[in-house]
Length: 190
Picture (cartoon, rainbow, N blue to C red):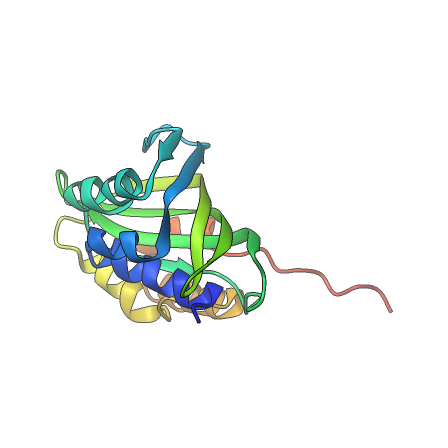
Protein backbone atom coordinates (compact mmCIF):
# COMPACT_ATOMS: atom_id res chain seq x y z
CA UNK A 1 0.00 0.00 0.00
CA UNK A 2 1.22 3.49 -0.79
CA UNK A 3 1.74 5.65 2.26
CA UNK A 4 1.89 9.45 2.34
CA UNK A 5 5.66 9.22 2.79
CA UNK A 6 6.01 6.98 -0.28
CA UNK A 7 3.89 9.39 -2.34
CA UNK A 8 5.98 12.36 -1.26
CA UNK A 9 9.16 10.51 -2.17
CA UNK A 10 7.70 9.66 -5.60
CA UNK A 11 6.82 13.33 -6.08
CA UNK A 12 10.43 14.38 -5.45
CA UNK A 13 11.64 11.60 -7.75
CA UNK A 14 9.30 12.85 -10.51
CA UNK A 15 9.88 16.59 -10.08
CA UNK A 16 13.58 16.69 -9.29
CA UNK A 17 14.36 13.89 -11.74
CA UNK A 18 12.33 15.50 -14.56
CA UNK A 19 10.12 12.41 -14.99
CA UNK A 20 6.57 13.69 -15.68
CA UNK A 21 5.12 10.24 -16.40
CA UNK A 22 5.63 9.29 -12.75
CA UNK A 23 3.07 11.90 -11.68
CA UNK A 24 0.36 9.99 -13.56
CA UNK A 25 1.08 6.90 -11.44
CA UNK A 26 0.11 8.43 -8.11
CA UNK A 27 -2.02 11.53 -8.79
CA UNK A 28 -5.74 11.03 -9.27
CA UNK A 29 -6.68 11.80 -12.91
CA UNK A 30 -8.95 14.59 -11.60
CA UNK A 31 -6.45 15.95 -9.07
CA UNK A 32 -6.19 19.69 -8.47
CA UNK A 33 -3.04 21.74 -7.89
CA UNK A 34 -3.24 25.26 -6.45
CA UNK A 35 -0.58 27.85 -5.74
CA UNK A 36 -0.25 30.86 -3.47
CA UNK A 37 2.86 32.92 -4.13
CA UNK A 38 4.14 35.64 -1.80
CA UNK A 39 6.95 36.81 -4.08
CA UNK A 40 7.19 38.26 -7.58
CA UNK A 41 10.42 36.39 -8.38
CA UNK A 42 8.64 33.32 -9.76
CA UNK A 43 5.22 32.57 -11.22
CA UNK A 44 2.94 29.60 -11.74
CA UNK A 45 -0.75 29.33 -12.63
CA UNK A 46 -3.07 29.79 -9.64
CA UNK A 47 -4.88 26.50 -10.34
CA UNK A 48 -4.18 23.43 -12.48
CA UNK A 49 -6.77 20.69 -13.12
CA UNK A 50 -6.00 17.05 -13.89
CA UNK A 51 -2.96 14.82 -13.45
CA UNK A 52 -1.66 15.38 -16.99
CA UNK A 53 -1.72 19.17 -16.66
CA UNK A 54 -0.17 18.86 -13.19
CA UNK A 55 2.62 16.67 -14.60
CA UNK A 56 3.29 19.30 -17.25
CA UNK A 57 3.30 22.18 -14.75
CA UNK A 58 5.28 20.52 -11.94
CA UNK A 59 7.71 18.54 -14.07
CA UNK A 60 7.60 19.14 -17.84
CA UNK A 61 7.50 22.95 -17.96
CA UNK A 62 9.38 23.22 -14.67
CA UNK A 63 12.21 21.03 -16.01
CA UNK A 64 12.66 23.38 -18.97
CA UNK A 65 13.16 26.34 -16.60
CA UNK A 66 15.21 24.73 -13.82
CA UNK A 67 17.84 22.01 -13.49
CA UNK A 68 19.86 20.31 -10.75
CA UNK A 69 16.80 20.65 -8.55
CA UNK A 70 16.54 19.21 -5.06
CA UNK A 71 13.36 19.55 -3.05
CA UNK A 72 13.75 19.03 0.68
CA UNK A 73 10.93 18.24 3.11
CA UNK A 74 11.82 20.23 6.22
CA UNK A 75 10.30 18.16 9.02
CA UNK A 76 11.15 15.62 11.70
CA UNK A 77 8.44 13.18 10.56
CA UNK A 78 5.02 13.04 8.91
CA UNK A 79 1.87 11.26 10.03
CA UNK A 80 2.03 7.92 8.22
CA UNK A 81 -1.73 7.37 8.48
CA UNK A 82 -3.01 10.83 7.61
CA UNK A 83 -5.12 11.56 4.56
CA UNK A 84 -4.08 15.22 4.79
CA UNK A 85 -0.80 16.98 5.48
CA UNK A 86 -1.63 20.60 6.25
CA UNK A 87 1.65 22.55 6.39
CA UNK A 88 4.67 20.57 5.30
CA UNK A 89 7.59 23.01 4.98
CA UNK A 90 9.87 22.67 1.99
CA UNK A 91 13.15 24.09 0.75
CA UNK A 92 14.22 23.98 -2.89
CA UNK A 93 17.73 24.52 -4.27
CA UNK A 94 18.14 24.54 -8.05
CA UNK A 95 19.72 26.28 -11.03
CA UNK A 96 17.80 28.44 -13.48
CA UNK A 97 18.47 27.26 -17.03
CA UNK A 98 18.25 30.68 -18.72
CA UNK A 99 20.57 32.60 -16.37
CA UNK A 100 22.47 29.82 -14.55
CA UNK A 101 21.51 31.60 -11.31
CA UNK A 102 21.14 29.63 -8.10
CA UNK A 103 17.47 29.63 -7.12
CA UNK A 104 16.68 28.92 -3.49
CA UNK A 105 13.17 29.03 -2.14
CA UNK A 106 10.96 27.98 0.71
CA UNK A 107 7.32 27.57 1.54
CA UNK A 108 4.96 24.79 2.44
CA UNK A 109 2.87 22.07 0.84
CA UNK A 110 -0.64 20.96 1.68
CA UNK A 111 -1.45 17.46 0.48
CA UNK A 112 -4.81 15.65 0.31
CA UNK A 113 -4.83 11.92 -0.38
CA UNK A 114 -7.64 9.53 -1.23
CA UNK A 115 -7.91 5.77 -1.19
CA UNK A 116 -7.54 4.03 -4.54
CA UNK A 117 -7.33 0.42 -5.69
CA UNK A 118 -3.61 0.08 -4.91
CA UNK A 119 -3.24 2.47 -1.99
CA UNK A 120 -3.39 6.22 -1.70
CA UNK A 121 -3.31 8.74 -4.54
CA UNK A 122 -2.87 12.50 -4.47
CA UNK A 123 -6.29 14.15 -4.75
CA UNK A 124 -5.23 17.77 -4.19
CA UNK A 125 -2.02 19.65 -3.62
CA UNK A 126 -1.35 23.24 -2.65
CA UNK A 127 2.06 24.86 -2.97
CA UNK A 128 2.75 28.06 -1.08
CA UNK A 129 5.90 29.87 -2.16
CA UNK A 130 7.02 32.21 0.60
CA UNK A 131 10.36 33.13 -0.90
CA UNK A 132 12.35 32.39 -4.08
CA UNK A 133 15.71 34.12 -4.33
CA UNK A 134 18.03 34.32 -7.33
CA UNK A 135 21.75 34.32 -6.52
CA UNK A 136 24.57 34.78 -9.05
CA UNK A 137 26.24 31.35 -9.38
CA UNK A 138 27.15 30.72 -13.03
CA UNK A 139 29.50 27.84 -12.19
CA UNK A 140 26.93 26.22 -9.82
CA UNK A 141 29.64 26.15 -7.14
CA UNK A 142 27.30 27.46 -4.42
CA UNK A 143 24.53 25.11 -5.52
CA UNK A 144 26.80 22.07 -5.25
CA UNK A 145 28.06 23.13 -1.82
CA UNK A 146 24.51 23.47 -0.53
CA UNK A 147 23.41 20.14 -2.01
CA UNK A 148 26.45 18.41 -0.48
CA UNK A 149 25.65 19.76 2.98
CA UNK A 150 21.93 18.85 3.25
CA UNK A 151 20.21 15.48 3.75
CA UNK A 152 17.87 14.69 0.84
CA UNK A 153 14.89 14.63 0.64
CA UNK A 154 13.95 14.40 4.35
CA UNK A 155 15.60 17.23 6.25
CA UNK A 156 14.82 17.74 9.93
CA UNK A 157 14.82 21.46 10.87
CA UNK A 158 17.75 21.05 13.27
CA UNK A 159 19.80 19.31 10.56
CA UNK A 160 18.93 22.09 8.08
CA UNK A 161 20.05 24.76 10.54
CA UNK A 162 23.27 22.88 11.37
CA UNK A 163 24.07 22.49 7.66
CA UNK A 164 23.38 26.14 6.92
CA UNK A 165 25.47 27.19 9.93
CA UNK A 166 28.41 25.16 8.60
CA UNK A 167 28.08 26.77 5.17
CA UNK A 168 27.77 30.25 6.70
CA UNK A 169 30.83 29.76 8.91
CA UNK A 170 33.04 28.81 5.95
CA UNK A 171 31.98 31.35 3.36
CA UNK A 172 30.70 34.94 3.61
CA UNK A 173 29.23 34.77 0.10
CA UNK A 174 26.67 32.33 1.54
CA UNK A 175 25.16 35.01 3.79
CA UNK A 176 21.90 34.78 1.82
CA UNK A 177 21.30 31.41 3.53
CA UNK A 178 20.38 33.14 6.82
CA UNK A 179 16.90 33.79 5.43
CA UNK A 180 16.34 30.04 5.02
CA UNK A 181 17.08 28.94 8.57
CA UNK A 182 14.17 27.55 10.57
CA UNK A 183 13.38 29.69 13.63
CA UNK A 184 14.21 27.91 16.87
CA UNK A 185 11.26 27.20 19.13
CA UNK A 186 11.61 28.44 22.65
CA UNK A 187 11.27 25.87 25.39
CA UNK A 188 8.14 26.38 27.48
CA UNK A 189 8.75 27.85 30.95
CA UNK A 190 9.02 25.27 33.70
